[in-house]
Image (cartoon, helix red, strand yellow):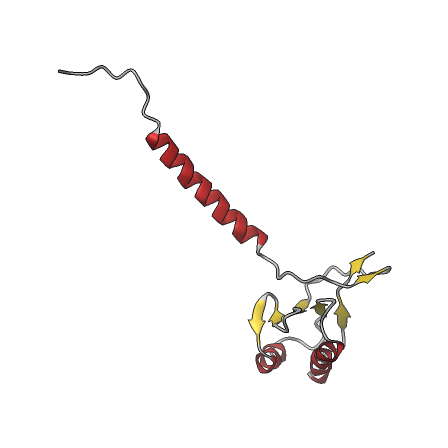
Length: 124
């Protein structure tokens, strides 16, 4: 009673394809979430600088990030104290953030001795 196999079993093929699809989708989400979403303000002129700055990001929800790491304000002060004072500090602030919050953060950075502070904008 031996049956002849005249059809291809596609179930293992489907399983393999689903696993590959999951792997691709997972790695794609890691690649696209590499930067904190901030809607930057627009400006007609922008500077170009080639060295790597310290990036402080202020989100619309009020969160603070230093080089894509979440921070509180006291943690930000401690983290910045370990960097050279001649480093460029780039502030990426969401355009709907309260101006007072932005000024407070920039004032704290200046108080730590950093002189080169820039605001990142999108060229319009």
